[in-house]
Length: 174
Ligand code: HEC
Ligand code: HEC
Ligand code: HEC
Ligand code: HEC
Ligand code: HEC
Image 1: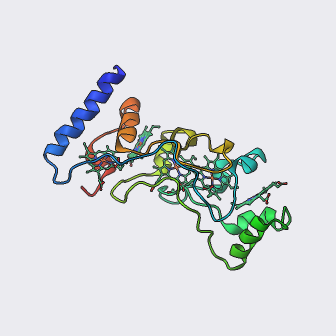
Image 2: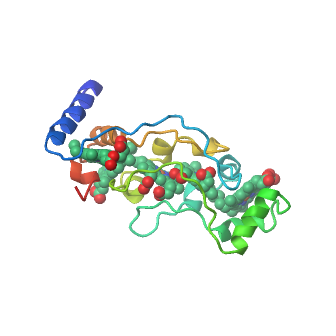
């Protein structure tokens, strides 16, 4: 099927479904690439991935698989109780760890609560690489939004890979 026909069928699907819906779908505005997201500690993916660390060493996908978790501060301190401990950024990290407090990392990707998104289904079942949805994170000093999380982008990949696209697939409560 051509790309154009994919696009048309998606638009048609949305249009048909919307005539029966109370709430009108309005695509969210996205700026891609987004601005660098300011973080409470100057953490660099590039530096750590260059050390040979894998995405899943830090971002485990526990339980039912919705979340790609953030690493625990004690895990960071496994290295940083000795590596660069004189650095002001590491001292900030050590202070959070000492207080047993999670670092309040600012979010880069976020879908609204009405959307059902599960990491395990995509990473473990569909074998989608992190880069498909998050860009080349391992090369970044600072993260910013690189890929769309709009409804259209989800549905386009579902159409291309033969995954279901009914409204209730992603909006279970509707
Ligand atoms: C496997 C060991 C290891 C782990 C685990 C680790 N780091 Fe690092 N980190 C390093 C190394 C090596 C460097 C580079 C040090 C250098 O520049 O010489 C570094 C550098 C840094 C720096 C820059 C420090 C500076 O002033 O140059 C920060 C901030 C940092 N890490 C934060 C973290 C955070 C937050 C975590 C947990 C999410 C973490 N690190 C986990 C090894 C580690
Ligand atoms: C040493 C631990 C560590 C490793 C390894 C690591 N990350 Fe991270 N990741 C973090 C920390 C800490 C943050 C929060 C700070 C930030 O956004 O830069 C984060 C944030 C992210 C975010 C933003 C989440 C959001 O939406 O707010 C994504 C996406 C991400 N990582 C993907 C990856 C991918 C893909 C890899 C492998 C290429 C990877 N990470 C490797 C520690 C790690
Ligand atoms: C099919 C697209 C897709 C793939 C593949 C994917 N992610 Fe995500 N990721 C998302 C979306 C969408 C969000 C926002 C989820 C939300 O708001 O609930 C997100 C959020 C995150 C977050 C923030 C915490 C969270 O779960 O909400 C981290 C960290 C993250 N992803 C890391 C990764 C890593 C590491 C990989 C590869 C192992 C990966 N992602 C693969 C789409 C994806
Ligand atoms: C890389 C292509 C790709 C992208 C991008 C993608 N998906 Fe998927 N998704 C799939 C595939 C393939 C499946 C089918 C997995 C299976 O059943 O093995 C799937 C399945 C699902 C399911 C069904 C889960 C279940 O329990 O059966 C939901 C819900 C879902 N995706 C939501 C989303 C949302 C929301 C987004 C956008 C934020 C998104 N997907 C982006 C490829 C993708
Ligand atoms: C593959 C996943 C997926 C499917 C299938 C899907 N949506 Fe969505 N939908 C999303 C995502 C992701 C968002 C949030 C991002 C956005 O607004 O673009 C969203 C947002 C919405 C919103 C806006 C909600 C708000 O509060 O802003 C409405 C309404 C909506 N979808 C209706 C539908 C209808 C009707 C269908 C069936 C034709 C459908 N969706 C199918 C993923 C999906």
